[in-house]
Amino acid sequence: MPETERQLLEVTNLSSSFDTEKGELVAVDDVDFKVDRGKTLGIVGESGCGKSVSALSIIRLLPQPMGNVRSGEVWFDGRDLQKIDRDAMHDIRGNDIGMIFQEPMTALNPVHTIGRQLTEAVLLHQKVSPEAALQQSVEMLRHVRIPAPEIRVGEYPHQLSGGMRQRVMIAMALINKPKLLIADEPTTALDVTVQAQILALMDDLQKEMGMAIILITHDLGVIAENCDDVVVMYGGRVVEQASAEELFANPLHAYTKGLLKSIPRLDRERKTLLPTIPGNVPPLDEMPSGCRFSTRSEVEHDEASIQNRPPFREVKPGHWVETCPFCYEA
Image (cartoon, rainbow, N blue to C red; front, side, top):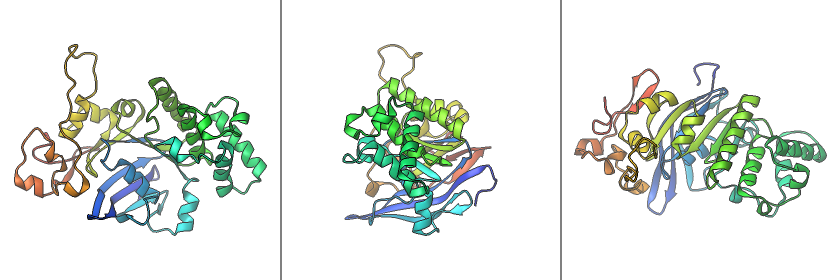
């Protein structure tokens, strides 16, 4: 259970898996993190590292019947979300916890108007008339700076630009004023200008509503500008966790260092190759049981580090790291 009133969410020993033709494959392996009220936690890592599965596990939206939360606790505002019944979870999801899904074009229903989809979110959680729900929808669209919201509520998703659809997703996630917003790659496929507008909008709404945010992304620039704390995931595990300031100033795990080195910098010599992490994230059925970064590390690992999981330790106050002797710089 959360240690203080300041904590809104605490995830402890969370593990999730999928039943496949190759057997049960673990996608999230013993993950821990916390989110304070009014703060932003960034979860960063490459595609396939378990970021989105962690988020979907929190709100119990893993694909069924193949997705399973194997173990762990998810304490939200004093309640363990893994132990409450389906109706109670339905009341929390979309009401106390909002989520911006990764692809707005697929998350929005193409055969229903924007207004219908927004009013449905209101009517599910509030005892108001359809007319009042529609008015709330118009006001929320205006709140997320969509022009002519009275007209937009009658339009379909395909009639809106990518940036507008993303704003609709934000409006849908926030219309019931949640305590926690989970934003899964909210700026994917948006140009830089629209990306900046979406992030600035989320920041303004966070300050206005006092909500906490979990921001899932692979963009370290977004993390640096918007997050208070950072969780770095690789292969379904947390390999490093610290405040944003500490992580960027003093990265300790080889994977975190590799991500930071791959960011373009103005102080580098012109026309030089951008450093990259060799290889790709292994498939779940080929993950090493020990240090999962061992297959891509520039330092050759011994058999013990490949077979045995390194301990996850607090190496300085608030700075945690998976202490593989070949990936962690003490």
